[in-house]
Length: 306
Image (cartoon, rainbow, N blue to C red; front, side, top):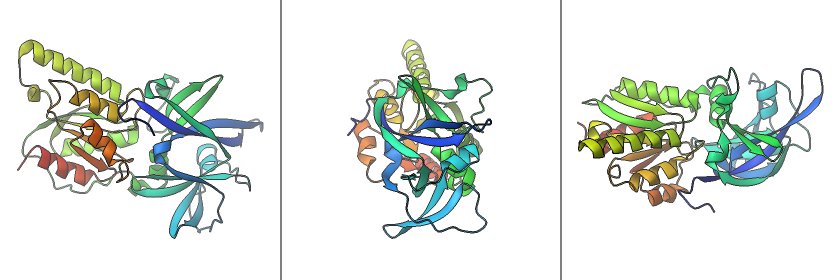
């Protein structure tokens, strides 16, 4: 088990086999956070459902639950590599279980979040269209970290963000720092919080958010002002390149100037099995995506707004 707040993660490495434009067989390594993986199984019997997107192969039963099966190769490359040797990775996030069909599963790697390179180093990279959130250089190969939330949202848009509570608006302007690496999710959160009356500074990862918070703390110390003149609340994802949400929260709660600022962990990874990790680093509240209505309600309660 990983110690909370050390900025480390474990990833499951798996492969997808496909043919390039010249018809040459290729294989690419991908990764997904172990925290989102429930188990890895052999291919189950899949029941096809008519009129579904090509990447959804159907559904299967696992422990009395009906789970959708997504062919990742079909989604990413437009071609299926489904064989008797294929494997199924059962993921759970956003309170949903999904089966991801892959060619094979290699191993588990433990590493620091700061080893994950932001894919925007690639020319013409569009975070709103691409399903890669990080690149890991491992020996002579690269592992591409998948944005599985975006993939599920592309296939089933209603699973991305539940914008319930649209009638909720804050009684005063709230200043926030937000950290979220998924471009699609970040855009939806920003839009909904702005509509509720929140002024926010948004960051793509925990490290950039932490650097900004350090600037605020230094400015506060120098000018002897109230830190809440700059920020009322912090909302952060957990799974982010460079610095994860647990480490960001731990840093905030260890800082004499920033420690009293409420921190909400808003992540697809939140479930009853990992709540203790957020408690360990001092999180004020922990909420699971996609319930943005619950997020707005929590902000009102924490800040004692009318």
